[in-house]
Length: 386
Image (cartoon, one colour):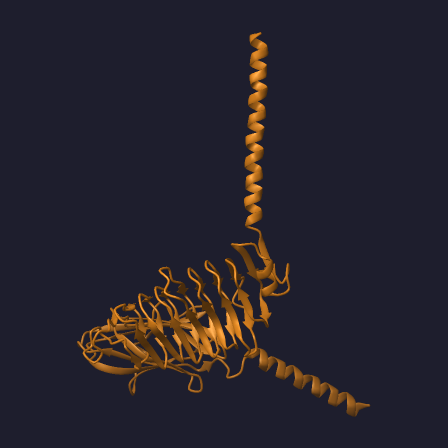
């Protein structure tokens, strides 16, 4: 009797164990199904079709290519470019990407030739990160009602757009580079604007009464700004908070834009740097260094070799050649140039001059032109040899 009871209990226990294991396997397979990645153009030929067919909180991975479309995101999805050569180009017509849903991620794209590169319209908890937004009428445009939870604009290069506008409060705008054009914060407050590089024509902050935007640790390569006094509490701008602890050098790197390509040039210095410029025809990078206290200091510049090379380099301080004082380290992909200055006063101009520079026209255009000429020559020779 006891043996039968033991066998029955063992059978019941094994059945329960199989049910538990099967249930876990089933729930795991269901959760994996929920995380299914949609690939463009493998699964759907366009980004918009993939968005339309994606489940809520679905992942859409966009492979390299140029997508000539106006994408509308009206549900929470993660839209991720496999690499920066995933390009959204709508040929100057309409918005490249419009986001009207909460909890959306757009990451890693090149977005160009649109009326608005990215429009966030009435949505919150949207993350726009690691994109190159270039050559649009408006690069990024955020307009929302007064939401307690804002959006996240992080790590983008926003360059050569006519303007960018934030009509929205409580956003986090971190580690971006704004190059060229205007940047406007209009009738908004509570935005956290930290560790960005500003190299714009105008940066304007028209604050919402009683609710200041928080500017902290940004780098300013522009002298034209409104409402953002440096340092804070400038009597010319009563009531404005200003930038707390503005950076003396670009954050992480300073993007040089040439032929819609981005070349990251990094600067490390204990001087205040300004007026950073790349001059293609003169094969040089120039900048100003400023140290009013008259202390010694250093400047280290790292330049990618596909932008500028020197064989040899020339380094000028104002009108004086200081190349012999520079410590120049050549790596496979970049060059580091280190200078040490003793007791420098006021503002001085540094010029780093190379012997080769990125061509005025893109290399693929030059290659196409050469191939066309070769074909024409071959046709010409064959025509006259008949």
